[in-house]
Amino acid sequence: MLVDTGAGRTLISSDVFHRVRGRVALRGSAVRLVLADGSPLPVVGEARLRIRLASKNFPIDAVVVDRLHYSVLLGIDFLTLHGFVVDLKRNVLSCEGVHAQVPLVLREGDQPNCVEECVYIAEDRNIAPRSTAAVSCSIKRTFSGDAIFESSHHCERQGGYAARSLATVLNGRFRTFILNPTQQEFCVKKGALLGKLTGIETEDACSAALATTNVNQMSHSSLNDEVMKLAREAAGASLDERQISMLFGVLWNYRNVFAVGKRDLGRTKVLHHKITLTGGARPVRQPLRRLCPKDRKEVSALLRNLIDDKLIEPSESPWRQELCQFARRTGRFAYVWTTEN
Image 1 (cartoon, one colour):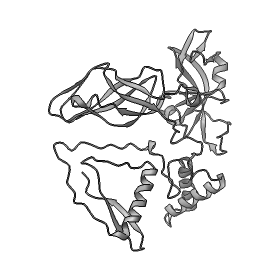
Image 2 (spheres, one colour; image 1 turned 120 degrees about the vertical axis):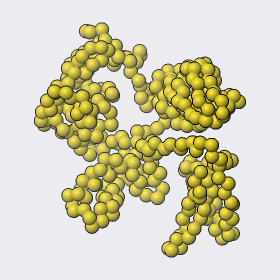
Image 3 (tube, one colour; image 1 turned 135 degrees about the vertical axis):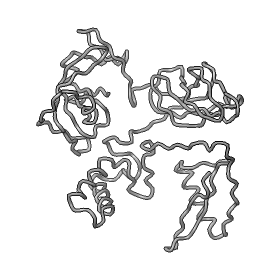
Image 4 (spheres, one colour; image 1 turned 60 degrees about the vertical axis):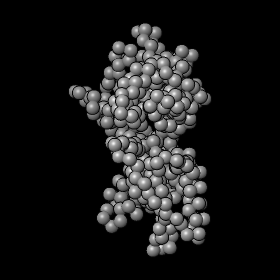
């Protein structure tokens, strides 16, 4: 739920509304909503809702909309109607009339920065042999946001491994996975030092605003043309104009997800990638594929680009993949990673 004092009306996502509506009637609405970039936000209707905060119910006429990034957006109408005040000094949403106080999690520039903090285990946890477990961790500051977690290798000396990963921190707490590759049960103790946390600046993958990557720093009209071109290429001859228009709507609403150029790296926060353990199998030993001298320069340039884009990094892991180059009929080269472990 987001508190937005700049929004005139309280909004609720249509998906959330249909899950919790019960017998609440959905009526028509004359409200028209426009996002900051000028694109419309589809309005489904209006409904009389009760929003529960601090164990108390607060009624409000909310606008039901499609494709809202948050479940509920509390606007200035809700705050004014019930006398709520945003107290930034104490980080609470307070209502003196009913003595209700709701903690706030500040976002973006208002929240405290997490330059580098030590990470400690927040609970005792036993990890079974040759398995992973999610472990609750904490830092000593009240920080909320995205951060990079890195292991300090204290855990590795006892047999547990924690990978460098992106963590979403809420009020100084988050969860990370610890691997126990040994044949014995491994125990992590509450209060043990696990690593460090460094805050980073991120943007929402499916936000309504345009992305700030180099590819999407084009004008609104040129981006519109690129997305329509992409929709027509994907449609081919199998879709009519109405269906192409619907496809364009999907691509446009999620334009920060789909790549529109070779240097557009997309938004990897949208996808969840998981590598499962292979039981007792050992890494597959792969023969080194030597390249002819005329191809080495092109492969070196490719690797430099991938490293500069932070898509890969040098590795000495036995599970690493070797790069294999082959020529297409067009004369250009393509690259694949050989046998998957």
